[in-house]
Image (cartoon, rainbow, N blue to C red; front, side, top):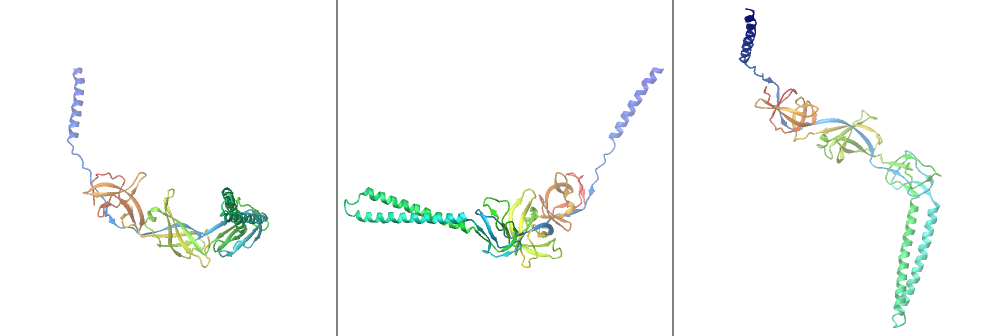
Length: 360
């Protein structure tokens, strides 16, 4: 009797398990619920915005003045802060060896010119005598002509050397190449200077009545700016004074490290309120790109791998990779495979997958 009892128990368990599997198979599958989101319409329009960028004022023209010849400083007629005009004498140098070299070059030229004159006279006389047959050997006439031409070339070379020595002496007088202010001075009378040394300039000259405001503009904003666009700026020295200018130059080159383009604004400084080197906060107004698409800023999802929006077509979600441009007022410019009138989710979640059913 005990044997039949132990056999009966496994049969009961097997029957119960099979019954449980059949019951689970007959349960109805739950349908995935449709999640509702707020949708927005893609518009074909740019987003006007104003951003603040760091800038710096620089002299419109500046030069470091180095000596072109060796010599001693004879006199310095300017100092730091001196205002000068183009062509004004700034300092004088002295180099006795240059004066001596010029005198020697002049004497050599005079001697070579005299030799050429004698040979020329001799040649012309022989040429006249050669009209009588047999009076002058053709070889002698040809030899004298060659000597005259050589003396002429030598005379021209000595003249060039003399002129060069005279030019070298003009470098002893240092003049201003343009109007401006002396901003640095590193020499005094009696100092020995060398034309090969570039440690420090003798003088530094900067034009301060006309300045350049230099600013690096991000490439996505620079593409919408052009010459003559208005720019406003403030300086740290005069934080309450708003100044304006116009874009005068664009470098047309994007810095690959910072993804920005250098632009310059000409600034008149007639009242001498500004100085080269001043820091400035530059307000750049961008009208926006009319070829861009405008969407709510919250519609753009940014991950470590991509930047995208979630579009909806026939209640099905699909992601569209985009790049962004100007931002303002909760709107942002986007560029991607979109069309005006497309519907996108304004508050998407990164859990949405392509093909998910969504509703308004």
